[in-house]
Length: 75
Image (cartoon, rainbow, N blue to C red; front, side, top):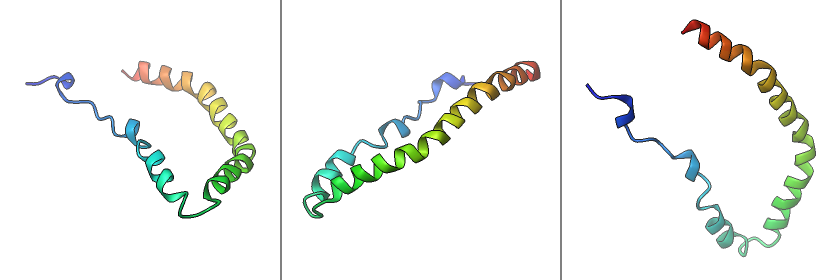
């Protein structure tokens, strides 16, 4: 019988953005203005998304402790 510690840890999501710099470095010269377009899109969308991020954090802070208590009680 093997323990759960014997299985290797999956680290796929950690390396998900590893090749984006290489990709962007090759595609930006092909499409002039692509990098400024991406940057401006991020600048204008960030204020629109920030309230939802804040609401998510507040929900996690308020909902986390009852969930952890429920998990602890349930066993």
